[in-house]
Length: 193
Image 1 (tube, rainbow, N blue to C red):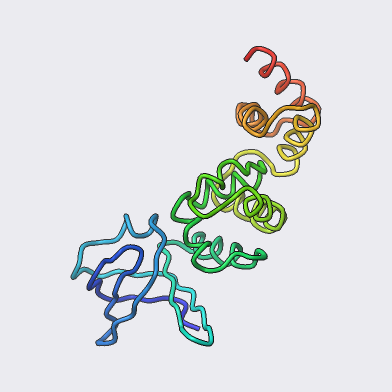
Image 2: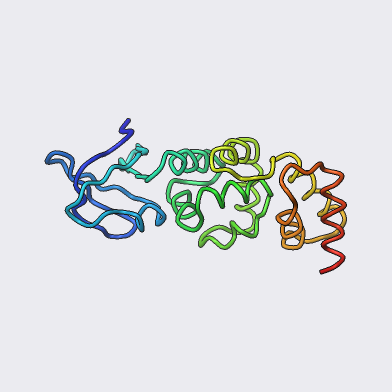
């Protein structure tokens, strides 16, 4: 497995780049979040990588941070999500936004990514809830603990509020609030709106 590449950036053809590592040029697909932060052509670049070996191809994916690579790997473990779709998700939202969407179970944020429909978004949220939500929330500093905000969100859904209303109410809650207090405060803010 190729875990990291460090070399000279030769070409950029979104989402693919070409990196020269001591005379061997690697084609690397990167999410747009990494692409926008690349140095200029001819400068040194270092990427965390993930190699996908298929019967017909060996594909190398590159990431600016370890969190991006970890999120990519978790996304590819979701049923029906391939490497290209995982790359599209990370191109459409940051790792912090993905972690927050998973933690708060916000399918609407995922459906804004091209190629992600409602059913796919719900499958991502369901399968990544225990894996990505807590792990990445801690890694990238999502303020609310996953269980309390998820419980508050579920309670609001059960009371008939849609995803957008419930997510907005949960987002406004202070850090570390209990489930009962969170539901009360969320209902107050929803009744004012």
